[in-house]
Length: 162
Image 1: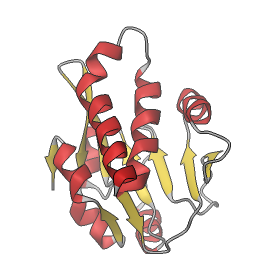
Image 2: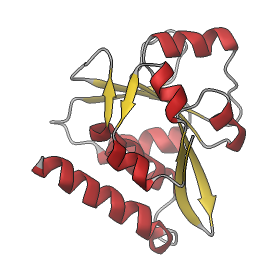
Image 3: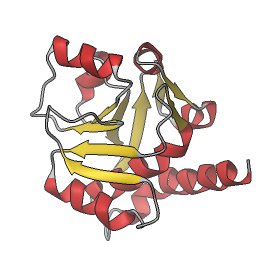
Image 4: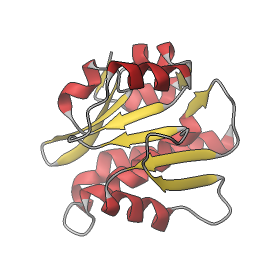
């Protein structure tokens, strides 16, 4: 419980002070920090102790790798369609087919994107920039359909919950 509270406090600090970091920290570094801080607030059906993250953007991959410690049970990979991931970050150029979306839902993969329309197309967490601050929306219905449980503590921090 204590660890969960400390994670929530750190996530809150990142969430509410993202604007102050905008000069010295890139958006990709902020996204990487958010993604890694989301993990304790997500429960996957498969209950794996190792979190596999797939992303396409090199800067985001580098930022994720910089932030994880060697002790953490997190592995970062360049995204390929043939890998099973716990989390997939999709860039705006990458559109999912309905077939691939269904595969991700069946495998309890958390989908994260920065494309505004993706929140209505099966993505569970969508990054948005509002007033020069990085925020996020959550589609909890999509998460539940994928048998992913998002903590109420994380839902409270979201800009929008569907």
